[in-house]
Length: 287
Ligand SMILES: Nc1ncnc2c1ncn2[C@@H]1O[C@H](COP(=O)(O)OP(=O)(O)OP(=O)(O)O)[C@@H](O)[C@H]1O
Ligand SMILES: [Mg+2]
Image 1 (cartoon, protein in one colour):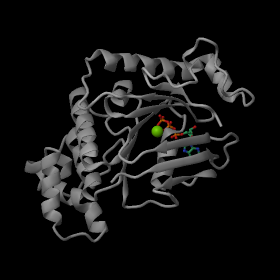
Image 2 (cartoon, protein in one colour; image 1 turned 180 degrees about the horizontal axis):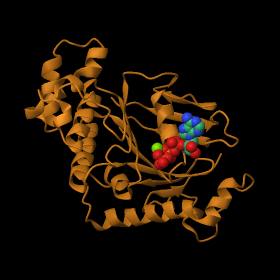
Image 3 (cartoon, protein in one colour; image 1 turned 120 degrees about the vertical axis):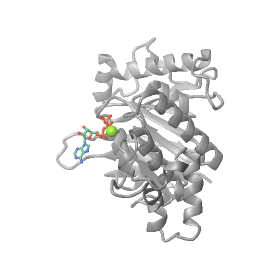
Image 4 (cartoon, protein in one colour; image 1 turned 30 degrees about the horizontal axis):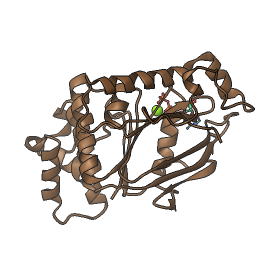
């Protein structure tokens, strides 16, 4: 069963920073749901993800997972970074087993690891050193390791950005399939609009300075998603429009105007404040 997440009005000031990095972030994620976080560089996506992982405590507000306030990391949720962060001197099997070893779950470990390596297409590489693998294969090892402990939540920070286009698509589909099969909740950060539409149930667009949640787009398409399909491309265009709105100079002024945080130009994409039943898109109201 996937984790239920409640992000309750998070504001965050890093020490010595004059302005907050995140402001009034509020979001609820259902068990088994996949959420994409997208936004300009520096808007606070990784900061927010680190808070979900319990690696950083917000200065105000709280993250709750299954009703409990997150104050430290837990083996029930796993974070995967842009680089696979494997131990280069260990084999694929050893790297994949690490989470289970740390948890003292050695019973049936080899069988479990074999099954996972089969799932991610690395059954024949179990005994080789991870250094001899390609970047995409190493990312698969990291994925197998993240799945080995049966997490309720996977947190992914641009996990596929360093991969070639084909490997990227393969792994995106793999993560979607596995998270659905196992009911895992997924929150991932990406700069890739197609990746967001391909994987997410909901895409959340962040604005910057300070980081806020600006728009939300529901992707109602079944998996595996047809990337050439008309609806897929309509949604991509809508997301691009939202993303553009957060980059527009007028939108940036609004970001810093505390008296009118929610008053975009009439007719702009950001002016949509009500749910649109056809596309599921809406602007998120600032607190
Ligand atoms: N440890 C830190 N101390 C002080 N400021 C920090 C720290 N970590 C991040 N920041 C600042 O917080 C802001 C948000 O950083 P964050 O890494 O969350 O952005 P991001 O949206 O993930 O960016 P990117 O897309 O480039 O990865 C940036 O202005 C960054 O300089
Ligand atoms: Mg980041």
